[in-house]
Image (spheres, rainbow, N blue to C red):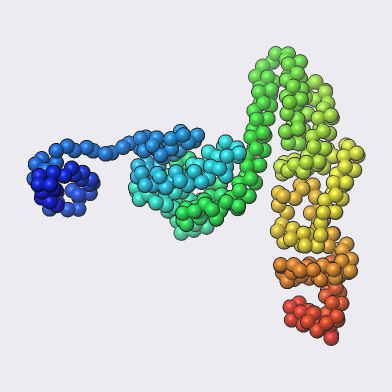
Length: 416
């Protein structure tokens, strides 16, 4: 090859550029190395080494990316220097950023961090040397079943490695990102990713508000704990200022704690804040934390008009129900999409109150999952089950096809 290059240069007056990886050549082909060492001075006039640093590669690829500093930090932690892997990872981030642009900064940063680590763990063999972590185990870190065959010291080793990378599991979002990495596309995950992300983002907002409130209260409590000075007036003023600015963002536990503290030192009460907070949480269906539930019931008893308001909201919610919705929500469990104040038996009560004729009308409509919903309702063994069974019998008497459906799909034989 070198001889051919020399011929082109000397005889045909060609300008030749030779691009090669000398390290690879040295490791894999001693004969080529020997030829190169012998003739490079005679044939090659000028040599340049192209070996950009990680910083230079990132500056070239990221350019105006607003998250450039965060991305650089993560790549430095993963010790990734392969430009192909970096480019592939940046493409993934570019596709994710429009989906997360309005989310909380803490959530955005963690998603970017996790997506880099997941992508690098999947494709970078150098990463796997420094961090012996199987890529498939990272998004499943919270699932202890993956460690069933591992010793405790191995589990601690894996956990410490991941912690050093500042990877923090985001449950379903990580699984969706890792699924997209495996098929090199985020198109298929967009809808579910946004859905799961919005749920997580709302939680991040609540956590931020609570932390901010906790920090402000901590500063107030320090006036009490850190001195025997008579600063009652200052404490009272700061509590009232805090409540004026934050009371609608507090959880009930925080408000109750603040109220108890204020009444202890000044004998003041704050019913206007308490009542407004309760009404706001009922009116906007704001989620309650578990520590609030008992306090809410006790506090609500002091305000009869709020109890009436809550009953009106429950009635309003009930009016939005139909048989299909009630069955699907019983099947799906009581998740955060439902009002926190609803009676856990409200769907069962609704189904029991539906008339025999309403079930007939429901059966005559077309439903994609009708078979499974009917089975579900019959298995409730309630008034709803009996009403539905009677409705099926009535329709089975109308024609032969319905009779066959009743007998062979639901084991309801009208001849018996």
